[in-house]
Amino acid sequence: MTVLENQFSEAIAFIKQTMPYKPDMALILGSGLGDFADSLHPDLSIPTTEIPGYPASTVAGHSGKLHFVQYHGKKLMIFQGRIHYYEGYTLRQCLLPVELAFQAGAASIIITNAAGGINSNFSPGDLMLTTGFNSMFLKKDLATLLSPGTPDRRNALLELRETHLFKNVKEAALSTLTDLKEGVYFYTKGPNYETPAEVRFIRGTGADAVGMSSVHEGVYAVHLGMDIAVISCISNFAAGISTTKLHHGEVTETANRVKTTFEALLKKSIELA
Image (cartoon, rainbow, N blue to C red; front, side, top):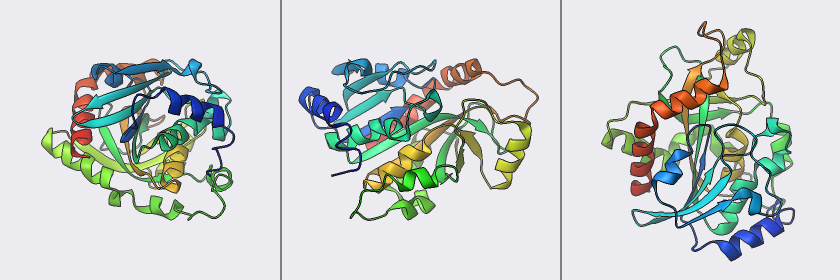
């Protein structure tokens, strides 16, 4: 039993009773990236408000739906929108999508997000495949979520390049002629954007992008033994990298601009999985 299984037993039971088939793969779609689910014509769409105990989505660009989709011979479970720590939810609540995917039978998961670019070689609209996480602010909290008696797989996160999905996404980028960047994703709790001073500190850690999600989801998925890949849409420059004032609308505007490229990359990655 996982550490979350008992706490979310009603949600798990609801999904198992409602899902039309066992998924091969799950996807979590970040800010402004949710249109991908609609493009695949879902077999079943469930508002997350109907799932017992599922937190409501409160952020623009996160519609709060769970879709079951078949694409290219693969059965998919797609979360259109995510749960953020900064919305006031507990870390355990934020991990519910990963837990549901695991309990439904998905062996792998692609996690997507919108992030601020720190690497000076990145530009808004770039897509970045995550090579590693910086989760210094979450390590203590995440340690409490490791199931007693199960292998501690957190060290697997030191080298995300070794996952099967990472390699699939890289191959998909070559096939679709996508200029896919690679880099380290730095997590901050939010909800405010980082100050220029904080960005200088984060840059000094070797990070290439910064955001407010994905790290805890990725750590927990790896702990459960799931194969993962994490893709960021660089939606803006982080504070201090550019003089442009940051706002959430920029996130959705950039995501819409690169929607076609993003969807092509995800589709090919699924085909190769």
